[in-house]
Length: 193
Image 1 (spheres, one colour):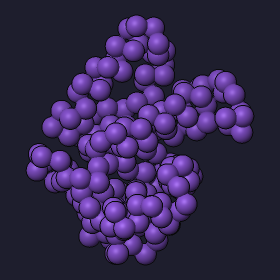
Image 2 (cartoon, helix red, strand yellow; image 1 turned 135 degrees about the horizontal axis):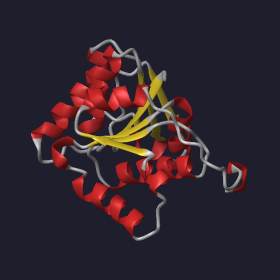
Image 3 (cartoon, helix red, strand yellow; image 1 turned 30 degrees about the vertical axis):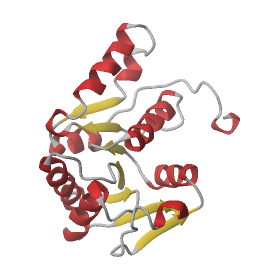
Image 4 (cartoon, helix red, strand yellow; image 1 turned 30 degrees about the horizontal axis):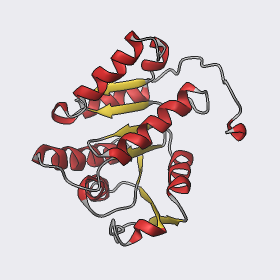
């Protein structure tokens, strides 16, 4: 694994531990010699995770759509900022640049981005690890919902296991580094979607 894609909020949230965790996670990613790929903003948790990685001397690549360049306030400290034409292109570029996907606390966009990567893994489009850093129990309800999907017969247990969940950043990275992807049958060719 060379680079990790981090999805997180363009806001800081109401719990100070969210910003602290984002900064700390960025530093840990850099300390492990991994590059960081993220949404390119200088605000909220996005700014905190990027600043943490940059402060620790890490490689940070931002990807931001033109429409959000001003609104999310693109990070001026990045040596590598990709300004793209759409959200779809942003997500694709981030996925192409990374070898694993982590969600820190965030809103609908954070959730949508992570779930798309889980769906791609479920369909066999990639075999990279996906994880939730469950800061201060932020994702407890979502994890319960994912488990309920299995219990209700909508998600196979092997597909639920595609998502690594922990509140410990070092544990998350260790599990990513040791990740042995399950064998997933590719249902359709990606070009058919």
